[in-house]
Length: 519
Image (cartoon, rainbow, N blue to C red):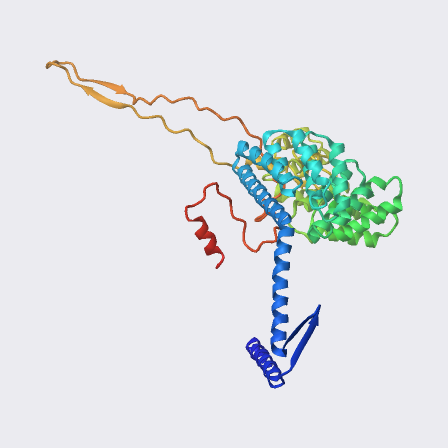
């Protein structure tokens, strides 16, 4: 509506101007080189306007002629870029489909048409990976690191290739460079963290974990930091006792259920005489995760106590989580040391029908200490040999007699308190072979009446001869670095989508081009 009003106002002003000039006639005289031109003011104005229009037309024609080489060059560059874009698209699709021949062909074509394009480098690297060309893939990834847009992608590819050839030094160097360039990268931070843990550099591991705080879940970050602090405390316990104690206290605050941290902090507080704080930490950890290490630390929280005092303390601790095997074992052990054999037997009584190995072994100790009955001792030791296993620190199929911060495979916080290989007893579905074909009975009648009964001959149906299956040569999978973007083509500045070129020209080509002008 506003545009309509402005248009009408503009037309009215122009008409008013013409009327104003028409009501005030005048003459214009031009004398130049002996010539004299006289005309009215209106005609002179129209002549000047016509000259301006002619001058603009001439300038546009000359400008188009002067700029025609640049326009032609721009046209061919745009056409070349579109061909490169189509080659990259075909190559990425071929990689996803596993077509190695088409992928390599498209990569070569894209390298010729669009040299230096980020997606061209990615296509070249992944086609080389698919063909098993390690050198070609690394050269492409090195080229990516020279461009700011593809630097992180190139570092990721170099890290994976270094892992493939088991080059730990190169993988560590690339991961550190990537972590320095982009601290928020999870893979780079995790690689640096794993390397620091493998070298038992706990201070460096803590420094590597800090940049990952935003990328990790809050609970996961707190757990990892608590594990690293506990490992640092255990490493410093004979070197710097104050630093070890401070690290253990921080670990307990971050993860109160972390058994090694709570047991270490409780022992250090007990050594310094702060029994109240030690008891508080150990009680909180026991409520969250009853464990024999917690029970042992709580039993010795007061140095110089008698065996009966330790038994009383164990009974109060076990009562906090009733019905717990670890509490019963802790009470039985303390009662055995206090020579309260009845209390020890009562504590283990609920578990004697199906005792674990520790329960049976402890019962053997009770029989030997109380009665010295070798027969009963051998009986309980025999039951211990046949009893089910007890939880231990285990990780990656390896059992440890103490907690370790890193598993044999390099996983941080990999050791768990559980029964080793407990998953072996899980039943899985059995794949059975198909049943054999049943024989078909065919009755053969005799040619003449005889007294012999007809014979029954089992006939097994014949199977068609099968050709041996020809297995294709294995093609190495490509490491999925990134997903192919929806539109990786160059920014051509055009409004429309790029159209694939065809080699055939329709009979109505000029007419089609004329129709496109009015779209």
